[in-house]
Image (tube, rainbow, N blue to C red; front, side, top):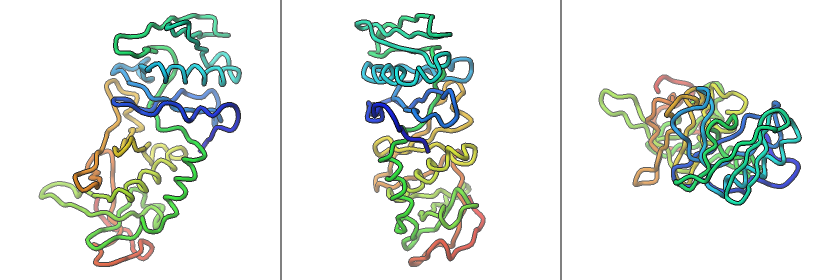
Length: 271
């Protein structure tokens, strides 16, 4: 996980608003220490069949400008420059930023970046506070103990017992079993996936919470036209039913009638 280490703290920028998702700029170098995510509405059509076309509200566009001024010296031929001239957003691209693009404030109250930049759907910025929160969640043993009627399941069977989490498993007739997680366990599942995504993106999804909504960015679908991350809202009891085909869980233990630690179970079949 990378965290901002120098310069201003840009991680405390605008939060997600309705209809927005986190976007990120492709870094010029591996493990670029200045990676920051920004909230944006994403247009259906992709740029060059790969990058998203974000539309930014003014406060997010201002945060992008500030960030680009920070990272531009690292690779002037890769990162664009941007600044505001009254209500006009000016983006400078190309070698030594000699191409000038003027972006007008749109009718929807946003600045459309269109084909400017290599943006992709991502997750929240990796900050020190977020890192330590993830450690606290993963180290909490109570999030691994099943309650009566719950089964320990995993989406990462190669890392048991750490990847085992308790869920109520619903089995509709003729359908695949559906794990239903308590909110604190759903947070642990999301943290487990997100903390491993950077190292193993094909095996662990990009997952984060937008308020009470669990958001999943599919690694292999996010570059397709029209794709938007899937959203899972809590049910009336506050629990999360993960019934999307983009998630696969395996049962680790039989249904618990008491407190059974996942370390005492063995992998089993199931979804």
